[in-house]
Length: 232
Ligand code: ADP
Ligand code: MG
View 1 (cartoon, rainbow, N blue to C red):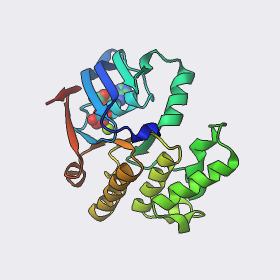
View 2 (tube, rainbow, N blue to C red):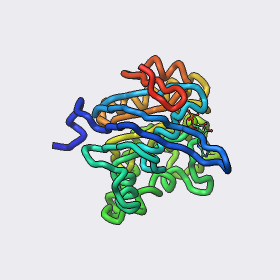
View 3 (cartoon, rainbow, N blue to C red):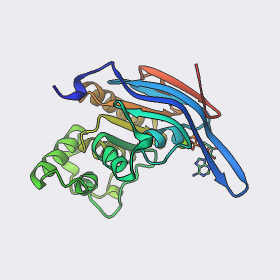
View 4 (cartoon, protein in one colour):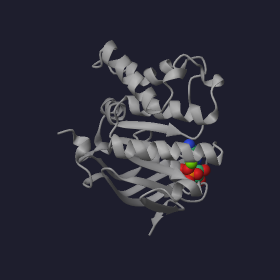
């Protein structure tokens, strides 16, 4: 059985997560003791004012940055104890990222952008790589745009490319930091439809941060963060 098929069980567990940023003499407390459990298959939004710690929270779960203290269990494994190499491996194998500003490489076409994260993973053969890339691009409805560069696409299409790039690695978890913030409401709606469909069909767990009321109305769970603490 594919591990993605086990829905409902605890998948990510955060306990007492603390993250401070030092800016010269001052210390900014971005996370002040966050406890949170995510379950497999969930479609969850983290909401909160600008500066409340949403991006920091996603970056900690995604092994992009390290907490000062606290525990992060990913699929039962304590990731704060892993070496940098092991963290990179986990990030590459199990986690996909989608960013507010899409973060595509302007000189690469759609196919090359989606392929890029797979190139670091040497266990994937070139044939499998091109199959995965084509399947992910087909899943987001952009098969006829494979050879186009990002500047030849609309904002909504660019975010679709970013979603395909996140999916091509067959992640268990997609972390999406304000994924619809730079889109108009029509495109935002379409992107939400697409992510919900992928959540259902590919059984990918999604965790967003958002301000978008369209998105908040469509998620199965909302987590409220305020000044670095989860409010219930
Ligand atoms: P949100 O995504 O909810 O807007 P962030 O997680 O980006 O919030 O930021 C939380 C707090 O941490 C803010 O006060 C922000 O200014 C601060 N912060 C975030 N990243 C850094 C950084 N790299 N260096 C210093 N301060 C940071
Ligand atoms: Mg943010």
